[in-house]
Amino acid sequence: MKLIQSLLVVVLSGALSFPASAARIKDLTSVQGVRSNQLVGYGLVVGLPGTGEQSPFTEQSFRTMLSNFGINMPAGMKSQIKNVAAVAVHAELPAFSKPGQTIDITVSSMGSAKGLRGGTLLQTFLKGLDGNVYAVAQGSLIVSGLGAEGADGSRVMVNTPTVGRIPNGATVEREVPSPFADGDFITFNLNRSDFTTAKTLAETINNFIGPGTALSLDASSVQVRAPRDMDQRVSYLSTLENLTLEPASQSAKIIINSRTGTIVIGKDVRLFPAAVTHGGLTVTIAENPVVVQPNPLAGGDTAVEQNTIIDVRPDRSRMFKFDPGTTLDDLVSTINAVGAAPGDLMAILEALKEAGAIHGELVVI
Image (cartoon, rainbow, N blue to C red; front, top):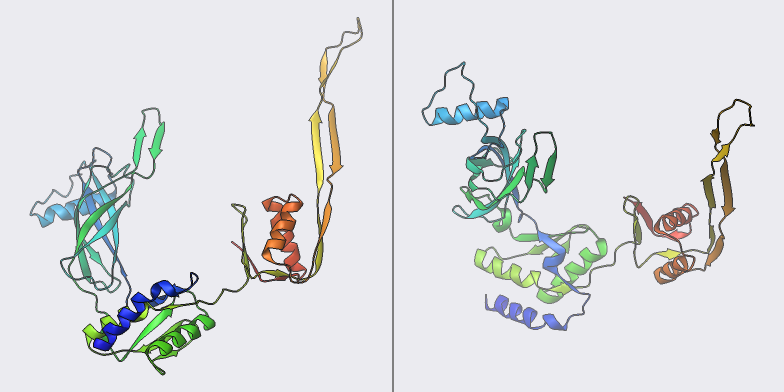
């Protein structure tokens, strides 16, 4: 235990001596088995100012709720409810959450409700994927959206009035079992798979703790031997996750978003020898209407004739050459020198990729 504490002091005291490009293990990985869980439930929001709904499932849920309180409505009676809305409730249950703790929840309308502002969520069970209830939600909603509608059908909406949140709106009732304390090993899973980073991570831990402590399982996982005692395991993991290492650079990529015109070029992108010319035609279409008068005493009518003028001019196209090993800076400077717009740059990059002149992957999203 004293050894682990001393290791932790060494790590924290030497953190400022690492290069700026180094990253902590906790920023590059997650611990296998330490994860959040999704919860979902179905409930009713009441107290709405006439912005509720009268859908069949809302009425059925309303009848069921009343029956749970010992109130039975006649079978043929239709409830006139405008201040109730059926909603879906979902939340994230963090790892190691204990009964009695609270979590935030999001409430979303499932039917035709016009808004949830001013509503209160009644007691709702939140279930996990296994069907068990892990939390119970209830409380007043916070809705940032606003909607207004006129008698003539005109409507104004700000943000989304049919979705709200309740901070600390659910109480945890059941703990999710975690495999964190099982076995003699803990496993770090890289956020981005990379063989080089996995190898570096294992070497960093082995150099700090001792040979044979860490083992790279694949490009995503590194298995580390750990003590069984929970107190020691927590301290041990705290020490390891604050170690820093130099992550490997990612593969050379060019990311193109054709919808927004965004182009991101990785620093390792290189170009093979190539010559590029890019240009087009400027087409101008002008309408010049002409008034035509009939001859005197001809009995005709004055008319307007359309006179269309089409002018086509080729733009000044420039050719530029890429030498072997051209870098990202050279590429950007050359493209900017010819005044290419983002759309033109996309076309140039795609043509270079087809010509096999790009050292890197072209990804279009």
